Length: 114
Image (cartoon, rainbow, N blue to C red; front, side, top):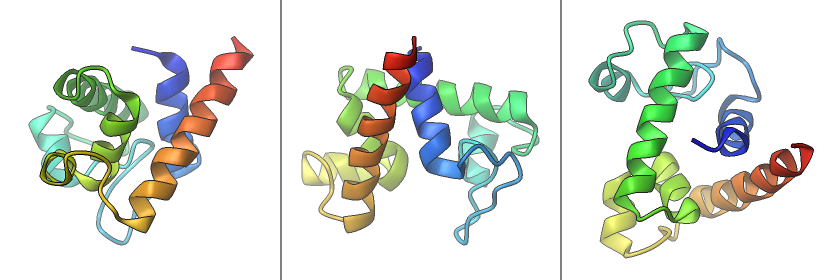
């Protein structure tokens, strides 16, 4: 897994706050929803190691689902894979469009740090 991409997702999701909790219930660094966390074997989404391992596993699965397309995988991370499949691309949700662009910029920035 591309470490720069993982850092970019963490930055966009939680600003590196391991105690982050969204209004929708997403938890921890990679903002895992409780059901997703459970499916990934994460028992404590606020545990940094479990959260990152679960988030990376989820992101890797999305990359596989979307044939390595980072924009589609990150759109799915934000809006859900069903929305990306339904719209046959990045869903026309302002939040998701901004998210995909932001993760792309952060990914490029972290990738340059080497």
